[in-house]
Image 1 (cartoon, rainbow, N blue to C red):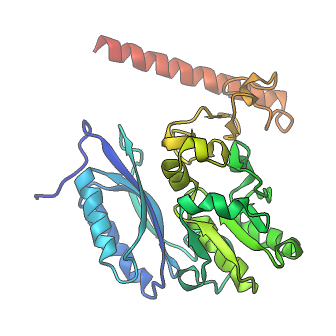
Image 2: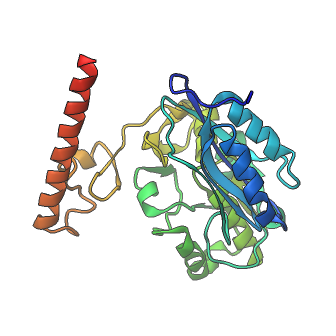
Length: 311
């Protein structure tokens, strides 16, 4: 065959990618793209929509490099935003290419982030912008993400999903009047779309952090940083800090909310059972069920490690 697949004993390359672009014929890209990935042992999910592409995939270094080259030469996708990380094991079970109305769901029709987004601000220039008293800084992420870290002075809209963001903006339009509006998110995609929405309302001075929080933490020295806390990420690391070092946050296995070290000192925290964020919303029966589930997981892990030691 001559095609490279990801071998179990070599590091896996993970690529989180997106690009807002007018993909008028996006439906026709689905089958060839799926075949391209499967033929090279790549797994993960890619979303295609009229507004562009988004997704996370994993495979060998050669396979992922081939995919990015392929996407870069696809009409409209040159300059695709990609963030790489490594994994010891393949983090996905299969390859899926899905057709969607939006590559990141906001629920607003007729937005064109490819041409209507705000002004990119490089991480090196971000501090000056958000330190300006004339700038309103808005965190476009969800409340559970903001809870473990955000930029100094940023407004938290306390949204449960990105779909709630337009309604929050509508309710706070007066606060945006006559000010610079600076928005940020984890990797850049949500804030890019958020700026397109805010500009569509008639606001002119709209900015967003290029590459998102992750690029800022990677490039800005800790002693110059205006980031406070850790950044939630949607993988097994849970959170990262400056230099993209793995953070100290853990997930509550009952409700999936990220937990700080302080959360884990709470009397309402029990590993695999409850945390301060879900304790009041769960019954004693729920917690008993979670406790039994956690016990079974621990037993399975113990049996697995014993088999590994004896092999």
